[in-house]
Image (cartoon, rainbow over all chains, first blue to last red; front, side, top):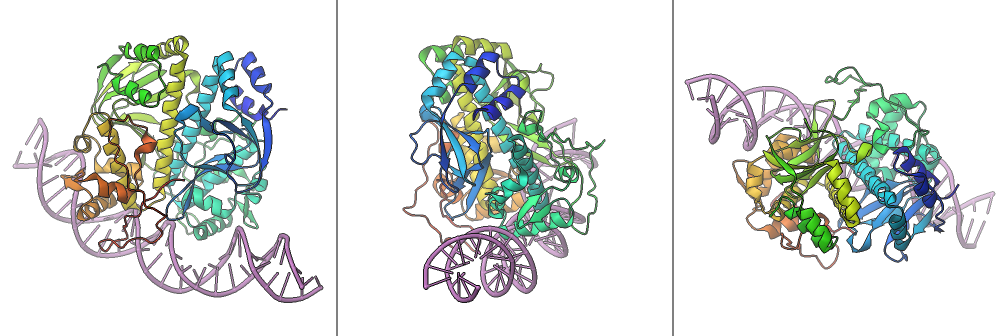
Length: 269
Length: 269
DNA sequence: CGTTCCATTGATCAACGTCAAGCAGTGTGG
DNA sequence: CCACACTGCTTGACGTTGATCAATGGAACG
């Protein structure tokens, strides 16, 4: 069980690793360090190299000039963040911890030599970028939906990803993913996040425990959010609850407890 | 001047190509074909391989079950779309043409052998994915801003990218990027898009010609939108108008023609 | 000369933000 | 043990943004 176990498991799932490459990755013993909550993972690090989240939750943030913070991506244990490949890192923003994190730093040189000796690893890392791109596109889709569904979908994603990392949703919400974080991801006000969470609880889709969400049964929430975990490309053993695909496309929203929510399932073409 | 000229120019900009790799790419003579507007680029193609936009504008779309369409990415001449690397393509959705397009198909095998003979090309293609990820994150940032700024920023992006492809903004809006497309990108109703465009015109930030936007002078629009073209990673010769960075962070919006718009510039950390 | 596709305009309403106050945990120092 | 501040959540009142519905108009095209 090295820090890279979860990462290798995900790459295995995609059938991207040969035996030699798997062993080369697992043989890595990167330097680990503890980063307190709300700190920049890259602070004080020399530029370049990747950072593997070993424990905790981190995110990529952009600070707007009016003081609002937007969260552009989440990173769970097993996720690699930052891809400073030489001078060409095209991504802006800081990598901030949401909860206290254990981070493993993989220097640029290590990656380079790894890729040189095992070219398949480059494709595997590239594939990770593609998965991150796909998650971002799902977030873009969510951005156009109502707040209830947006937050419900986010909770599903956090649930699936924390499960896949061997962690627990409530733990995740309790340590770091506060309501303000949900607000910065969903581009909503904290006030509205609070209201929506209570609406979801009233609909028996989630339960709240001092602000932290838990999922009593996954199925209704998944159906309501239209969550299909395929885009996360998590390993098989992880949560893989499939939403029931409705036979046809449902165009008429089903009235639901006096609000605009309905249980119509959205699928992507 | 091969179909890959624009692509190679962008990769050159990022100093990602050696001379041999540049020549290998330019030597490609992929099959080109004409795709009518509003068609799926991948229809009738065998799976795998990449598609290079040679002419026209395309996009990645997701169809939601309630019938709404969301546009998740735009592709201009010189952009590669779809990354079916074996069985592991993690991106959903269709690639649709917005205007009639000339598309060059690069088969999977060609890419494989290219990468095998010139390993640097894999890093270059990976970098393209990172740029696409960065653009998506900028769209996520935009999704949290008001409609005026969101659309203004989108116009700036389309302007910069069409210029970089040797094309022209008005031509781009006239042929394909109708208001309904803006609506599907910005997650707004077409009605509101129309209103916002007129508001921008009233503010002398754009001009409208039968629904198509043009930019009288770039500077005010760029400042209003908070557009910094760095995230597009376009070649040097392209539009590179830099917004005036205000000395400090401006927190007080400047009142502006009776609406909530202001010229405060947003920068990313 | 209809038809079709877009863009436009007005009226109405729901969703969500903002402001402001209050409240429950959780430390921290006296 | 009790103030005290502090952080995060909750609640209400109110205003704004943007969606929706419906009708109109203009250009392109057969």
